[in-house]
Each structure stands twice: as structure tokens, then as C-alpha cells.
Length: 410
Picture 1 (cartoon, rainbow, N blue to C red):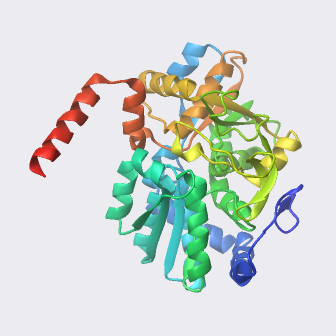
Picture 2 (tube, rainbow, N blue to C red):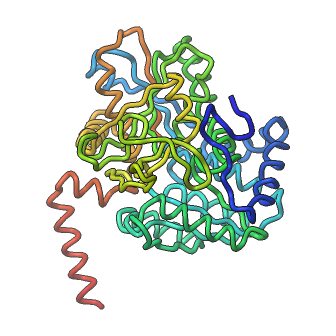
Picture 3 (cartoon, rainbow, N blue to C red):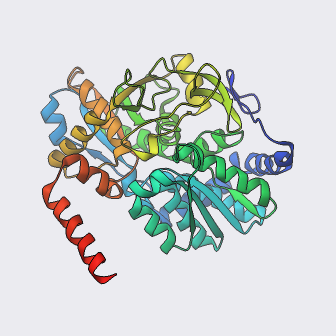
């Protein structure tokens, strides 16, 4: 599937010459471990003792009964340490950083979950840590900013551009160019220059491996479909990796924002607004205009609010190896509330995109069918956004009272 970082026509490594040696070093050390059973054993041991692997596969009985169709199972990455799938990749890269002998890590983050995971890894392994985060995302993901800082990371609010994830990535790359001898960039998703798409997918593949084994043990057969939200693509590639050679339909759900006709969305593979381009060191589908200028994106979820997408998923889209759909902000809020009230489970806004579209299709499948939804993260990080979307009067009053209290004591 890959020829030195290419997936069909997508991928590659479009780098400034100054970074070539650093990427060669990274590729060499990744190649040395990816087929090494001893490294994978060390990695799985770390994730089982420090995190919560294997994460459970939960049967959603109430949702299944409601939709009266396929059995619905939820892969619970929200129960992974730091509350999302991000730790899978971050801890793996942390082991590589130790092997390279570097002492500092940097990362970009949108929803904040990757930032928290990176700060956690840095604290465990004793690395200095800097996190770049768009100013817009700093405001809407304040709880995660708090935890990053308490874990010892420096969080830099990026005020350039649209002040979201793509701008945080740009700043992280600038930092790396200036500090590459001592620093490793812990890229958080299956995007960017080779070997990042392959490497992030490698570590996240533990999700799909577990899910496949679990569903066979529980049900004795494979699911008809699996669903995952798609921002950059790390959790989707993680789940999909377990079923690539099986007769299982892979469904990725992007951020439909205010609707695909509104111009306010982040749907690259499920809309007609994206085209192939080169940016941030790799070639893929980007939301860009005819001059190659990146468009503004929108999503209620910070983690899906990204202008590009994994080159692996772009290839899968073109080859029809996976199906890509979208869910609007309104659909997502409804799916989140419904999942909470039916199952007592609180998905992150990102994950709720997968839930929203799965709910549209579950009732059309046979009761003999099975679907798996990847809950890539937990929703407590989204409390400000969700409370606002729910228009909760008690929450509004709490915020007003807290603001007055702070003002009084200032």
C-alpha cells in the first residue's frame, strides 16, 4: 500500500532541507521497531499497566432496543488513560523519544486530548514539554488547558491565522525546525510528512486489534459495519486497521458543521469542497480555494476542526475501501444527549459524530447484524460547549455567579 510514505497519490514528505536528517533519523528508528515483537510487547505492557488496555467493548443494550436493528457495541477509548485514544500514539512515541535520547517534546492540539496525553507522557518520562494550541481552542477547551499546565507543560496560545488546529501545527513545525537536535514533535494524528501517518496508525492499530478480538469472543462473528469520527484520522485508522482484510464496511464520519452547503464545516472526503493539495509537509485532500489558499473550517468539536485529512484515508476514499459521511453540529448535540440518557455514557463531541451517523443507519440493518462505534474520547472536556448547546439555565446561572465572585475578590 505504501511506497516510502505514499498511499496512492497521497502522502509523501515535503520538507525543508534542514529537517531531512531529523526525519531520516525518525524513520530509521520507527523501521527498527515496527516489526520487532519485543518492542510491541514492551508497548502493550506499558499500555496495560499505565493506561487501561484493553479498553472494554460495551454492548449498548438500550440503544439497540430503541433502534430495533443491528446490535450496537461501543469501543470505549474514553476509558483509556487521559480520557481518549490519544495516549496510544503518545506513549508509543514516548518510547521512541527515549531511544533517540532527546529530552524535550512538543505537540499540537485542538480538542486538548492530545495535549493532555503528551503532557502526561512527558511527566512520566521526564521530558520538557511545550504544547501549541489555537487561541479559539484554548477558550473552548479550557479544562484541558488547565490540566496540561498542571502536568508541567507550557501551553502556547497560537493567535495567527484562524487560531485553530492547523495554525497550532504550523507553530509546532516552526519550533521543531529551531530545536530539532533536542526536540521531538509528537504529531497527534495520522497526517503530516512520512513517517507520521504510518507511525500514528501503527500505535493506534491497537484499537482495531482489540475490537476485532473482543467482538469475535463475545458474538462469534464480525460486525457488519464499524463507525469512527474523522478529523485528522488517527482514531478512525486505529479502528479500521483491525478490519482491513475483512468483509466489514468502514464508515468515517466528518464534521458537517452548519451543513455541507453552508461553507461552515470541516468535511473533506464527504463534501465537494475539498481538492488535492500539498501543505504541512504532505499531500492529501484539503479544504482550499482555487488558488490553493486554505479555507476556514467550522465544527462544534475542536478535534475535528481541521482543514486536511490523513493521506491513508484519502486513498481509501478514492479506492472506495471506506465510506465517508458527515454529521451536523445539531445532529451531534442530539446524539450526545440521547447517548447520555439511554446508556449513561458521555461521548466527546468528536466521538458523537460517529454516534450520530450510526444512529441514522442502525435501524435499517438486520437484528442479526452488529455495528461497532468507536468512542474515541469522553465528553467532560466539552462541558462549556455542551452546556451552551443544551442552553442549560442552571449552568448559565452558575457561570454568572462565579464571574461575579471572581470580580468581587479581584
